[in-house]
Image (cartoon, rainbow, N blue to C red; front, side, top):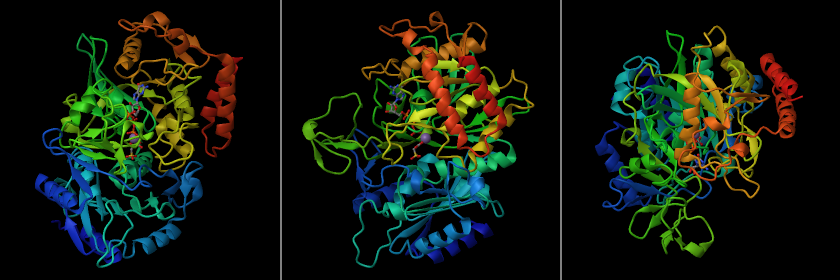
Length: 593
Ligand code: GTP
Ligand code: SPV
Ligand code: MN
């Protein structure tokens, strides 16, 4: 246990409020994990998969209403509404605390409160942040063991007088004596609160057991709270993957990429190149903490210890490294179960079996007419199981970044790749990035394009205008030759018939190849009004057939004039938008004339 007074006092206070039957301090050991899994299998919450097919692995099925992040129920309770800005749901911190105190009062009755000390970032790095999550969900506890450095090591790092981010979580379903528990307890939508108190650096999450709503080290701490800390301390917390790309000369280039949820970060991070000259190593698939090093370059660290990845679409064809990573010791949520105790999902690369149990626990056959796995079904797995994991992935100082990719799902308008003209132009492109909304969030607008600045729309813990200013400031006073260059990419252009124009996945290395040769000054670019595009001859298409590069690299001035109008309207709604970005928009409008 711990002698940390702040922690002991907080755990006591919260236990008095939530009134669990028991308090269990998690040590993070494998024995403890196995024991908790045994208990969940016994209670019916977890299904142990076939030990021969999927050793050490389990399946969970969520409540059908609790399948993804809930942006409408996510709150930033900064001191003022202006602090939270136009893109966040703001609540007065005192009022929200009072509401939540009411909800948490007795919320853990009949349950165990698990104390999960965890570290975001490598153990004992001065840049890492310690959190402690209190939760009544054993599912959260086992997931946090894979996703963070959780348990005794975190307590040791905290020491007697270390500080931590308090993260309170309850599924919001207290039990009365004699009540039969459900296999996925949670609260109704209107009672869910994913609440952040950036001034206090605290997180209170009520009513959901799923992913980013409940694994509080991830989106809540490592992005929303960390982004606010980072603004104050002069670094950045971003929704980015980190990869290392080695060419045939053995030169290594580190690249990050900010794509919105379910837009290809895990896939790019684990890419198996279709060009034989390249090799990719994985450092992170979702979050990067960025800091300027003494040499003036920007260094990236992955604060997580595991992957919480989208299952549908993951196959030995599309992402073999992910498939190898999840061959054992994996937690699956909302995938389908085969009759021989293994998992299946749409796009796994094998034909649908004649019979499955779908993600809701019902019989399923190929003519059921619905998905067997939920589109946001996920796997949780420790990063070290990834065959492509980089030897540098836990370096406390991180790796120096040469290029940053941004982009999302844009079926039209935005070309396959464009290079920003300079840092400020790159920030402009990031600020207006758009993407189709995906199943990673609960929404009635799935498929519609929305602006998602740097893929951080749901994750900025403060005012978006200040966030963009912070990005611009990173460039000010920096030697431009040391800053990463910013590239906008779009793997998701579609033909009029609705088919993807670009093969994507392993073939995305062909775009990385252009970027790396650009960084080395080996290839030129075509200056267009929207940015610098490749010459068609410089994209290596060896071995590919029927790729319409001219469609992929087209700049349609009329469409872009409309886009510029839409950007202007979007900017209108931003109260603290930096002047420099308005200038950038004017520049685009001028160049389009
Ligand atoms: P989060 O974990 O939600 O942050 O998602 P992510 O950005 O890591 O997305 P991920 O790599 O899991 O991909 C999401 C979906 O997009 C999967 O179904 C993939 O198969 C699909 N996808 C990924 N890369 C590509 C690509 O290059 N082309 C196409 N067409 N689909 C892709
Ligand atoms: C995302 O939605 O960006 C995810 C999944 O990475 S979740 O952890 O649910 O936020
Ligand atoms: Mn994500």
